Length: 203
Image (cartoon, rainbow, N blue to C red; front, side):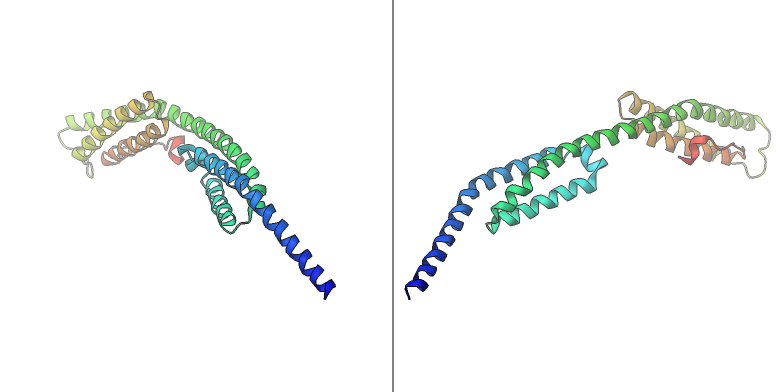
């Protein structure tokens, strides 16, 4: 009986030490979890959402898991899981910045092509429309009205694209310029003007 009593006492003592250890880790775990959550919030920017969305979502899921661990008292898992999260948030912002820089270089290259080719395209089609407008009878299948309307749209869109570019919104500028090119090509089709496909057309 004495030996059994000693074993029970030892077990209770170990359990007490375990509980005490867990309790002592609760405050540090809570503090660490708060730091991790703040780090993820700071890393949740328009750039990380756009350029590294999957990695950001993975971090957010990790935070959910750490919260679950904390709620059941698994403080060691929280304390060991927080540091990698904080480090990853820093890397996340860096990778997003790198991808953004690469994307901007590509957009600027596309803009340069639009800037050199689109005005020429519009002028070529405009000249064709003017020549056909002076003719007594337009060739079969030519729709001057549609062509003039499409050219008006193309010029308006190109002006808008240049404003966006000058304002620093290169992505919007390229998108609008692409629409302007489509309108100019539509006008060319309306007057049966064959065009060589620009190199940028595939982009």
